[in-house]
Length: 255
Image (tube, rainbow, N blue to C red; front, side, top):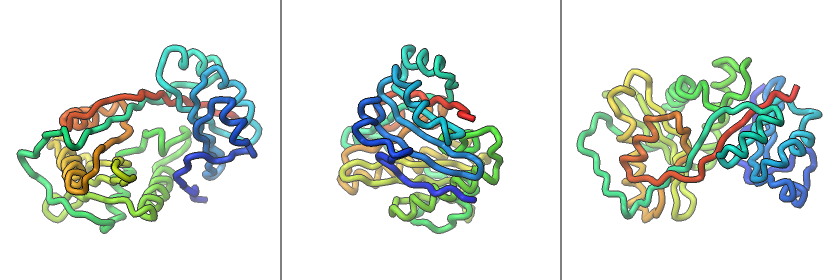
């Protein structure tokens, strides 16, 4: 019943050859099964080819999700092919050496490691119930989304990602997952218990990630963030991040 979650740079759905994918402007593609859904996710650089891309997958696919460079031109092609706008993301990138952000006040005790995974999962499930990475269809309920997030966290654990856990007294109230790739670190997921969000404690975990990068000689700290997530956008701004590579996500129910 659970979905097998994998980080994929290029998958081969429907025996699509690499050369054919490049001709259509497909940069990345993946296919995932969850219950009655078969979800194809495509990163596309050439919006004019969207109808051909849909044609490739429509026979045995229930949901198609397409990520495109943001722009009016892309939106026009997506809408003409029957896809609806879902979200806009940007890449926030912090130059670690140039960021002079320091933390003036601490409210959390921050620890590293994968302890308290069930609480991490609970916080994530309550925080990302509408996130396009984990919710693909209107009929996905809280249990479905929690299962998907559980698979995501399992993959992150298997990849030996770094976890910063924030505690208020003895209660885990926030977490941040960091993946290191050479001289770059990527924030994969971060969330705060709803009761503590108004206190602004999320910035403390981002600061811990920045400090880790400083000590590990990592040059860049980045994350993919929804422009609708104003809290995360504000935190990246505090860290002197630059925002670039705006991408729009569209979705279509194929059946």
